[in-house]
Length: 243
Figure 1 (cartoon, helix red, strand yellow):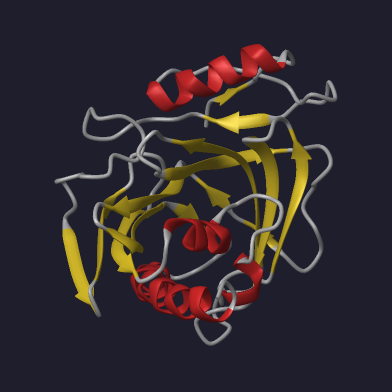
Figure 2 (spheres, one colour):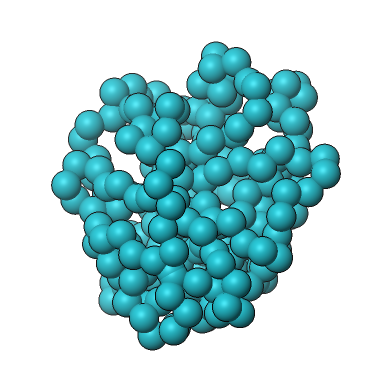
């Protein structure tokens, strides 16, 4: 796969991240003058990264008010998954549970996250993180870890978003006991509902290469079920962790 490098200067880095979200391909380095390698990025439906109203999903299922759809990814031989559902909590509470930043509650409720750490903070809204996951699918899927460059954005209507993509970071080489997975462009949107301050529309996107020697049938059955469970567990978490 083609690889690109970012520049050290943080002002340029922010500009290049804007290019990233708008469809450009730029390069950079870590703020510690160590290389951070990032995979190539493509976009979908001509609407930019992770379009929230993508009409081209090939398959869709609904469970307890949560819609999960998917289609073949343009990044790797797997699927791009999209989830959408209403969480009965204010956006700030939902964000506290899902944000990929320091202080997140994600590892306290998400059954697919065993630990989360910030490897390097580039700005308040841009960081490199490592997420570890426990065994899954009756231990057919062994523990994984993922190292990502994460960008957070706030919008005038109160929405918040996070976008992430796999990077290689010198401070986080592969660790024994974990298979290194790769998150191709993914993220989530927390959107307030007009007139309903205690509800949040949460849209999530995943296109994760779990790596290793896994049967395609195991992977294809794991993700839709996992995403539906993500929403159910989040609904419980905002009531127990944020009230």
